[in-house]
Image (cartoon, rainbow, N blue to C red):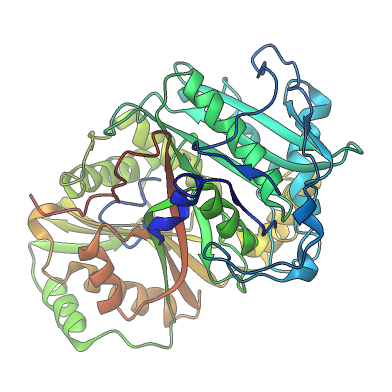
Length: 484
């Protein structure tokens, strides 16, 4: 649900031998509130040696030769960004090696790197190991039937793992853009531009070999509600379940490389202490007293009934979105069944008109308030912890994952009526405290306005970046959704 300086990509061309001196769901976009290195006159310096990743062979070591200017005092230039020199760690004079993930050892090192990157960050909550593994398992991710994915780790001269990345081609979306577009994701890296460049070059070159002309990132080979975007605003709050979290310097690494923001992902927070506007109370009372309408939660409903109601509203609400395809019954049921272990039926609310579902507001208990205790592993011990914390009522935040209204009922205050229902039946009973509305794209101004009208504030922003392989091609932001 729910920036970008144009010059960021241009420093790789037109500047001659410029030296980079500084080294360092569901569909959430829908209608709901749910080196030092010489820069030559070419877009990027290609890696030395042949890239042989598909056969599982490592790339040739890349020797980064020390430059006389390396020891000079850092002098600011037009491409510099603020940084903390004390935190700069330069591996530019060392040999770094890209290694494809091809066996148990490299898989383990790829999976465990975040624990090193975030070891001093008290806000970090690791993604569940099991969730990440599913993305790269052909038996669990159907996109790999016709799609492709590849992973690499980056090693320093002493063999320490200092970075990781994945690249993938989603067969459902790669050819729906103006140019074939792949993705990179699960990017983690030390604070060093040369290391980041090597990782990103590797993903770019692999995608080029497979016919892509651009890459978005960091994204997921799957739904946009998981592992999607780069955190650019609010590094002081813990992440909500499934959302990306990263150090502030990642933004600098990507933008120095040439990535530009394709769209922002706006997360909204609504406190239970903020009263709903009177106009929404009036709409709520109007619906309650109109026999043609009925508002209810999902208690007593079967998974099949919930899935069909969800599908009905989804297909009626998302019709204005580019590349929208109606959801099939089997897909809806699979989605609802996946939510069942963590679902609170009191947080699944529908409005019906003559018994046809026309609006929905679906929230889940904020799982990271539990998963912060399992250290990223839902093994048997992690499952016992999960059940314990769930039983003891440890979760006090709701995460709104879907907020949808059928097209013909949009703009009539039904969103507010759903919030009033939640206030009366959930908040007033002190079942939950606050609500986080999972992201809305900044290309969806109507839903951004709805969130603001509901008294929610944009407390956190992630961004989806895009990098065009043809550096002379004009860059375009994601188009604004217009009502059709």
